[in-house]
Length: 240
Image (cartoon, rainbow, N blue to C red; front, side, top):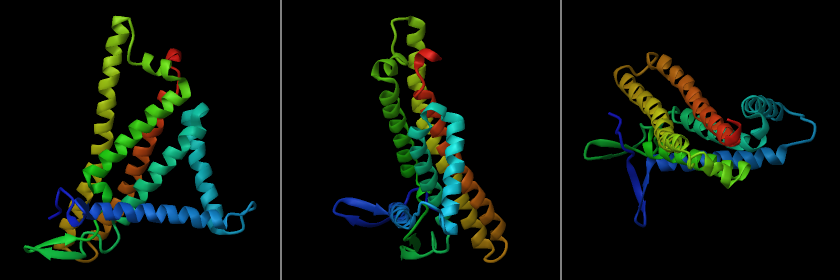
């Protein structure tokens, strides 16, 4: 049975280190290491398949960002791509053999060393909060603090009421982003664990392929919604 809460592997002082934190660090390390490696291998004229594939992917996603964000595409794209790569790699790497199955036994229960970080509500809530904070900071930087606050506060009673609704909607956005990602990935973990317990071979493969698709879709949905929110908030309130 998959535990709802992540399992603690060890303590760093008074700080508990869970199996989802270990996965987060592994994904971060892989992304940062890959960025340094790729940067060293880049040439002005692409000479290998890897650089061609990377440039094609980046161009495709930048064009997607530009089609939505237009004027603010260059500012929003780094956030969009960062969220997408982190969530996609987290979702897909958690499907590798060993996740949730290799660990230690305590009181007859398995404590896995690694568990998918996006199946932890703490991670998805953290991602949603970072998304919200980045959106508001980018908004202030782009349209100015006066125009930013005019979205929420006004001497006009009707606009003030709308501003209150805007504040409530920001809270619901964070909840929606975090629970959507967490719910889909955690449910997938439960399904895979259940099916793998009953059938060891062949039968789990279709479910595994489904989770590959779900992992991609959820990464794209989270990053696309962040892009849309950033686009809205970097557009002057007066132009609405």
